[in-house]
Length: 571
Image (cartoon, rainbow, N blue to C red; front, side):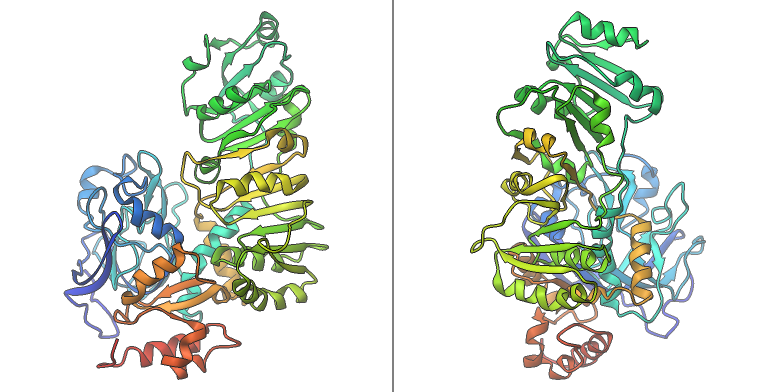
């Protein structure tokens, strides 16, 4: 192991840490052991870590959270056993997946990381699957709400790309600004994620058809995409004849109950039976796409659509009122990006993530863009206006705050971003949509959550549900570049600061949606409670004096660490 802390600071034997020890139970552990790195391991001293709504989900779910379970593949069991920060199942874990830190020690076989590097940490280990998701830092690997965290180089280098999950960052940005790159990168990912516009080449395709609905477009689509494994659930001999005449060797099923669940990359359904489409969606695989070819028919009632899978499993819905499957695939957008002239609605705009969506949209420079920031809290809407209004005006973007409790929201939006995980709002988004509307389901609905959606209207208006969870290394690097070039101040989304003593209050504020922005925890201030930026003057006037128009700054951060970290200062 290399010499720790080249600045002379000793690495202590114990540390402060926040641990989730059971469902609904957190612990401020003041004597958690600091593990020394093994041969392949890296020890990072945490500078800051943000609080996320996802942390509250882990707190309540604990062992039932899909990212708290064991890693099934991607790393040998004996390697996992060598990593003390790997804590699946009932083992206590340290949450926190919005971190920045500095490498202070490495093992003698570490090749890609060096002592002294300041790093932004990508936390989503998609190369290590669990039974229902994937591994992640802050879940089944301990996260950033502790003073020191141990990582293993065999985990934190991405297979295939060889990219590091510990992304080097310069000394100029504040710790808070770097830590906030992670949530901003999640926002970025939801706009730039590339959508699939045809059947998955080499994938599994299910063609289902109701009686009297002709099959059209399948042969042409498969010819363009490449070979697929086709399964057919048909209702008459003419449908079978069409597919066989196109050269398909059919694997059939007698009825819907015989169709396997969760395995099909594409489902093309010719028909409009509400019960059937609700059952067929359960047959979609991860990243699966369902194409509804209504053929002039209508469902006649709302469809219970699994919106949790849209967000977490990246499932997609497209459709056409015509007769050809080609039409619906062609209507799928290339990505979730804003377009010139879009009339955008951000539902839940005044919360931490809604503010980020509004700022990103206002900064995008789309000609003719207008944004309706919709929320139910006037005070938070006023805060949003102060934070984003100047940016919107400088870019020629019309920004309007709307309290939906007191003002009726008129339909006609071409882009809707949904921040609030309330199923009725998904159905409402479809009623507010204009033709070609992209509906970004950013809110993290739990898997299996179903929303009543007017699928007839969705198809008629060529709507498209988008949804992403987390971010990738490229998304984080893209936001980091904006930060380091001065194009984006991620601190614009910060509402409060805290040490470990304020984490319980911070989690409650995030879950109760009382915070107007993000909350940043400084591990080097373990006894500091939660303080909103607007209240800093009461306890730390010198820190408040370093704010810029009420916004957190590097100077304010430096001053907080100085005055709140003084020996003997009361908590």
